[in-house]
Length: 115
Image (cartoon, rainbow, N blue to C red; front, side, top):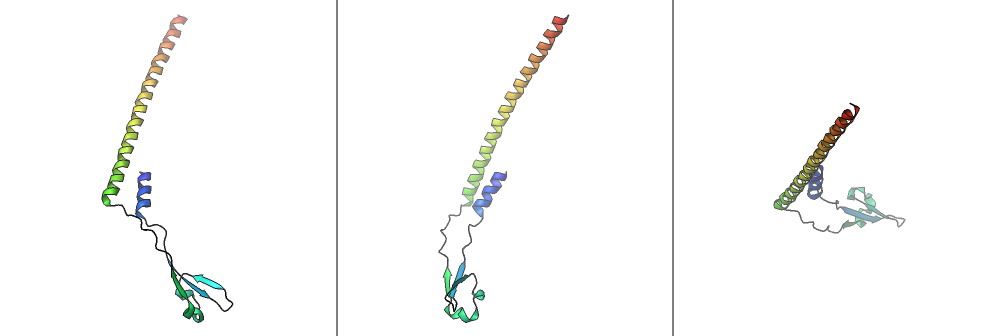
């Protein structure tokens, strides 16, 4: 269930944020970059250069049918693993029963030898 939730969060949440930034050069020739025009001192606002980060590659948003398909596949895989686990449990229970029978037989044999 945690895996399913993790995949859904990963698939449905947006990626890295892309933002605008502003570049200006002060009187000493030092270049500054800020993320808001309001952070540019008034005397440099006329010379500010507004930059936009490159367009982020468009990630294909999975359709509802694709998400449902992914979830169905995960559920089927989970059921398969549960069935395998149940099979192993039955096999181990059978082995435990055999060990108990062998132990009882050995105890009976030891009792018979003591008589």
